[in-house]
Structure formats: structure tokens, C-alpha cells
Length: 171
Image: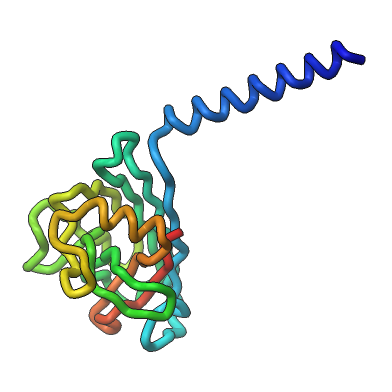
């Protein structure tokens, strides 16, 4: 009986140790969001578009790699951002995810039309604000803190719905 308990405890220790190795070997924290017009603010939208956002903080905490997928938009995406704002509250832009306009910041990937996938990396150079909400350009740690606090959302904007067509709170 005692041998079984010792064996079970050792097995549990191995499982817990392996899980810890996996968590650190794979990088840092993960974030995600499900985007829908029903999440838009201040006006909720009934549109066919949907999307997902996933991101991972690097092990050293200096960058975030992300993937944004969406489909069913009313037209090509003009741009997509991470914004500072709680659910049902519109907020300012922290960082660009994609931008297909002529004024796109250098290094920001193009949005893939009305449907597609875009990937990229955000670091301190990509944080643009919003200064009026307490985040200055380059304050990467503030972006991470806001994401951890669930105070950010991903938003995809189109010509028809320039304030945002689909949105999802980042968790």
C-alpha cells in the first residue's frame, strides 16, 4: 500500500515537472479573442463577419507574436488594431495588427481583404499610444499590463464600418 502511494506521488511529481518545462519552453503567456459585430461599441452590429485573435508574449517579455484571422466582412479590411478599452467601451489604438491604407505605418503587414490571416510581431517600437489614456508611444510594458488586465480588444475596421466591424476582448 505504501509503495503505491510513493509511486503515485512520484508520478504526480513527474507530470507536474514536465508541465512546468513545457510552459517555459514554449514561451510566455498566451492571449486570445473571438471577434464579432455583436461586440462592437458604442453601436452593436449585426454583420456576418467573424474572427479570432491569438498572441503569445515572448519568453523574455520583449515582444508579442500574433495571428489575426477573419472572414465574412462587408468589404476589405482597411486596418486592424489592438485598442485600450473594457467590454462595451471604445478606446484608443495601442498597436496596429494590419493596415492596407496609404498611410500605413512602416513594417505593419497589409490586411488580407475581406477574409484571411495576418501574422506579425509587436515590440516597443510598435506601441503607438493612446497617450490620452495613459500609454505613451513605446510603452510596451503598459500594453502587456493592459492585456493581462483584460482591458484591450482586437478590432477590424472596414470602409462601411470604419469605427470597427468586428471586435473581441483580449483575454
